[in-house]
Length: 283
Image (cartoon, rainbow, N blue to C red; front, top):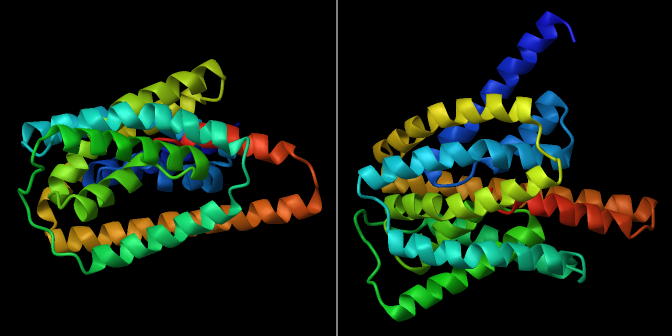
């Protein structure tokens, strides 16, 4: 690798981290929804390695973003705990199910649900400062939401934050800022567990992960600042666009998988996809 190529790769990795960090802080998501395809397209990284590397890189950025939201009083720690309790085992269940069931119909239903939620957010009036009323029932419901979020992440490779935030806003009427901060805190545990699993499997590109992670961490607070500058209306519209982007990526991945299955009738791709989903569970 020449010096020019090395410098170009470094800059591309830093750019990926900057984008991921800003998205993480601004919308309460892991950032992998954008970082993974960018690592594949710009750097030429393998899909599974890109998923694992982006997840490892976003852990410190998620922590920094969470601290920023906590300091600003925009986190429901009880709700975050409940979501985390459910999300970790849910992701394991999702990846286990992926190896054992045909999920074609479920995948298209999930895509339709994401599009419907995106449309709902476009017309949703969000009130800032609205928190959840704490109760045992609410805590149990949030654990259930965490489990379902983890299962969906494991099955479809869509990050937890992309699911948690709209569920908290649309389903529970939570303020968009509190939903974002709560989502980030909840993802700390699940992203750490996922990264530990990926490290044991040897899937993480440490050099790329360090560059992406440092850039993402440095710019995650900028994303948080952006979240507080955006009006609830603008935030809802942009998040709806993010959901539509996630749905589009899932459609493309589904169609590619169908083509590959037609070319080679081999059960191995299903196993490979399961391994890939294990890296994607908290993006």
